[in-house]
Length: 162
Image 1 (cartoon, rainbow, N blue to C red):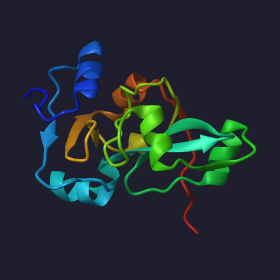
Image 2: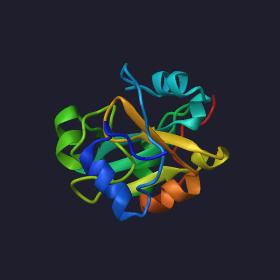
Image 3: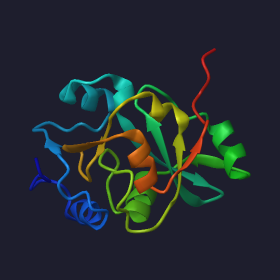
Image 4: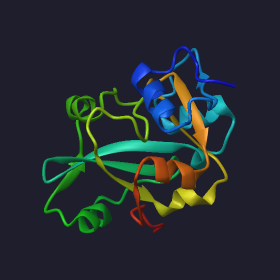
């Protein structure tokens, strides 16, 4: 299978630049803006989804890759980044930093190179599915390949069970 015509053009170009232009992407008639919606549409477990989340660390955008079943522990993230303050980025900041709207942010192919962290929990699946530049498109990759292509640093920043 090949890149879908509905894949965001910037993301399609990023796939081609990485030699991944033959990768399968899937398009859905309804948006898959949340990890739960994406998992249901794909037919995979929630932790088979990779969320691309933008945070601001001391006002600098940072991308966090997290499995769909987990949440980011912002205190662990703050400590990992050595930042005084960390918060979720708003929609305007996300679009400015990545070139994509929330719900469609892929793990790579952004308008601005971002410091990227990937939670170790992603490695628990054989394949993870990420947004392909729109809320209607997704693509699969083995987690180690996705982390490498995103140039992410592997860290432990998921919330711990109580």
